Length: 106
Length: 131
Image 1 (cartoon, rainbow over the protein chains, first blue to last red):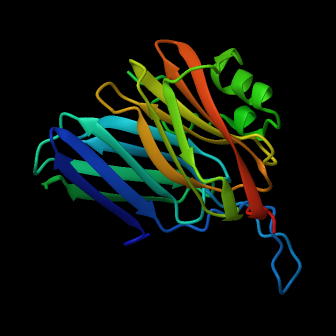
Image 2: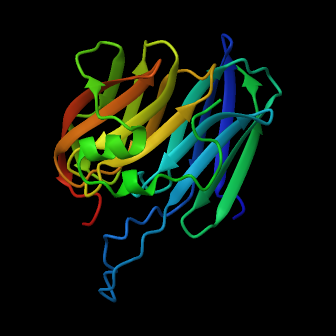
């Protein structure tokens, strides 16, 4: 799953703000395929975690009601320019992906 | 430490629950929530033309927030997401959610073991869950 996970982290006044997006269909399992009439099976990210220099800062548990191509922004104290922020995720088909970025000072 | 650290601990019962109280019991072990608080801020539109993408921002002024939960009252399953925050993480998240119909959106935060919530009614024009 190359290039499906985008992440950016900026530092301002001692607070690091992380913005990330994963390209993922997040199918609810409630829609029907317009052509075949068959239900499109649920396909969604269940768990996502973010690490700052290898230390867990945020973990998210998601259901089908997180929008397609999920976006998330959050912020934490204690980051420094050049530190690594990494996001990794797993979906209900046991597919996974990750992305990382260095914190940049604004 | 976060309450739940390892992958594989996805709370299936909570995500399958229909009502908000059932969801909270399954997810957090209690549905006792303090609703009259200024400590939780939920920013979301009054009118969502497309229920598939409804931007939501939750923030809090409460101390020691370790969990933020998003719920939509009238979705097929009320629970949208839970975010667990390590110490030093700001009580703030911004994300996009789906809404099936006009409903209350509920933002819930856990601060020092107690649950606090803010909610807002959002009118939805186009069903974002099953079209």
